[in-house]
Image 1 (cartoon, rainbow, N blue to C red):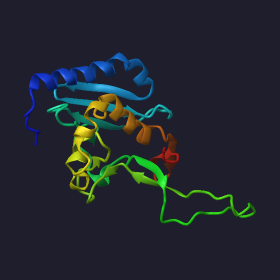
Image 2 (image 1 turned 90 degrees about the vertical axis):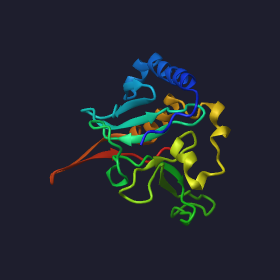
Image 3 (image 1 turned 180 degrees about the vertical axis):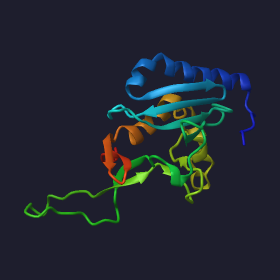
Image 4 (image 1 turned 90 degrees about the horizontal axis):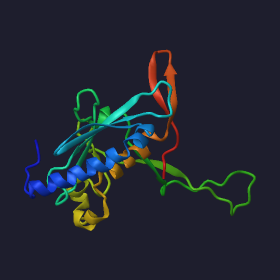
Length: 205
């Protein structure tokens, strides 16, 4: 269901138009990174993300934004099917946007043959897309996103702390999805079953 507009709509429209204009001003550079703004009509925008490092290029997903009440409230962000614009369920996600973090509960590994003081931090991938159940619509778990700030677990991390920092900007949010979703993809894995999957490198920091 659409979010009701409680902020001054003229203000939200103006700020939405600024976000779209800022994106379009760098459109050529963003295309080289695989970012395509395919829809922008207040309060909604959609960016398609394509894999710049694969031949042939593939569309990874769509990223749907809802800037209702911006910036009295942060934008909503969903990963969506690029053909239908339907939000992916948790079980359908083409990427969970894994972020590299230390695996605190994993023992530190010492490589055989090296001095004991030479140790290696064990890293794990923490998904930025969060859902409680496979059939739930996952949300992007970062500050600057409506679903993050509305989640009970983040009740103390208020939007007002980020509002003036550009945390809800279109280019910042697309950049985060690109960093953890697109940039690690280096090629395709093809199995003769047949199945096709992306050849994904380690999660970014």
